[in-house]
Image 1 (cartoon, rainbow, N blue to C red):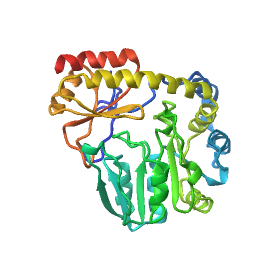
Image 2: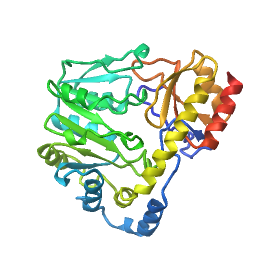
Image 3: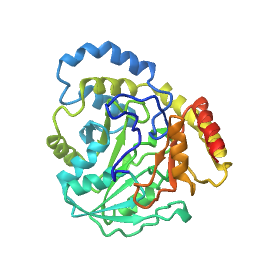
Image 4: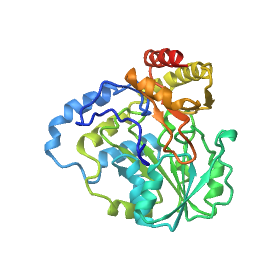
Length: 336
């Protein structure tokens, strides 16, 4: 695998979308809400205009939904954009990344010419983050973490911020009934969130960051003025007003995650790490064989071989609909 390769590789060599059942990308299986679909349809002809450079409608929707001041917001072309923007603007000398975690943190830090160090968490302790005194200018932490699913406490974030700037990636927080750390944003704590996973719009690329107001001004001046396209702004504003969709998503996940983990745990030779979000990390000594056999059945899982701190025996699976999950387990049971 390429060092920074991600899940969701559903295109062939010619760039055409393949016929895959994709468990490698952690996208909401409820799909596009009717509100988003209607908004996209109604606004399609608007692409003849430039997007609003201030993203005013979208910012108002984010501010209302998450109870944050607009002056603290930076709207993003997907959450990943933030790491490049933040690190190139602030230029911390040393960046510490607890691993395993999302590879774009490292990629963005190296692109900004930062020194990168790892804090390697222990599988025997379910990858818990027991880091007390980081010797770094910046620590990047996901909450919940991808791929382990761990949810670091707000108290630990605050302790880390006493000695280092902390960037908290909460891209999966909306799948959980858990409190965000957005209310603790300060000169030392910044929070970034994707909207593409929860609302099933990864092709539109959409996210936002909540940061200290002076940093927000600085980052907004540093980014591409039209970084969020017209349809993404419209879809995001519509999605954030759809409380029913968010409630249905959480109700689905509460049921389906238990079903998924129970079935996975009962498979021969599988070690499951407790999940909190809509994906599950597990280990099997024949993971490469599992991947190959699943590909023959047009099913994709995420190999974790290129996650720092993991190896080829680790796999990550999204949790999808009951029908799709049953298809996966029917194949896995034959393989194992």
